[in-house]
Length: 142
DNA sequence: GCCAACGTTGGC
DNA sequence: GCCAACGTTGGC
Image 1 (cartoon, helix red, strand yellow):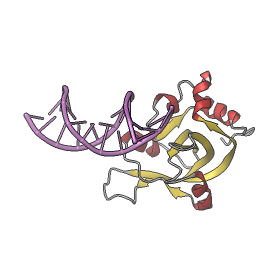
Image 2 (spheres, rainbow, N blue to C red; image 1 turned 90 degrees about the vertical axis):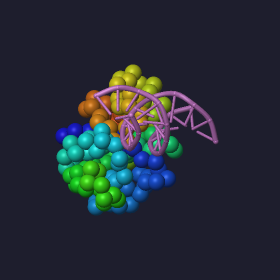
Image 3 (tube, rainbow, N blue to C red; image 1 turned 45 degrees about the vertical axis):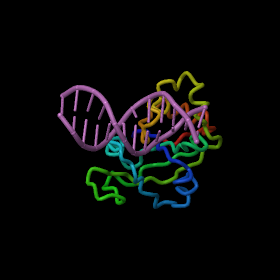
Image 4 (cartoon, rainbow, N blue to C red; image 1 turned 180 degrees about the horizontal axis):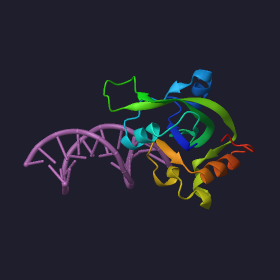
């Protein structure tokens, strides 16, 4: 089991929109970055991820999980690009802002801080637990 | 809206 | 295979 972080600009695809998709989830298409794609290739069914709103909000708003392994991205003919499907699992009782993450020394090495522009990031287990704690999730999905 | 960071492209 | 040019991302 591994942990990840998915970034999205809420006016393009928001947490609310993912929740509305229900159990079926949504194809995480549109990624055109090798590192982000490789992260998705490494994902397994049931892997959990933070859902982060970039540009607006700038906070972790919820937790999602991988419900389909990496497959061809239907929004392009280019065979290089693949994506997984994700679905909403639970909402953060208290969204965790980028500011809060940066202010927490325990999260100084988190990709969100060190690789700001990467849109699909790996998250370490201790980081996962810490952000869940900050978000008010007493029993983090694992 | 600006701009810094950084990934990608393409000429050589 | 290098590197300059260019495009995009994303915080501020």
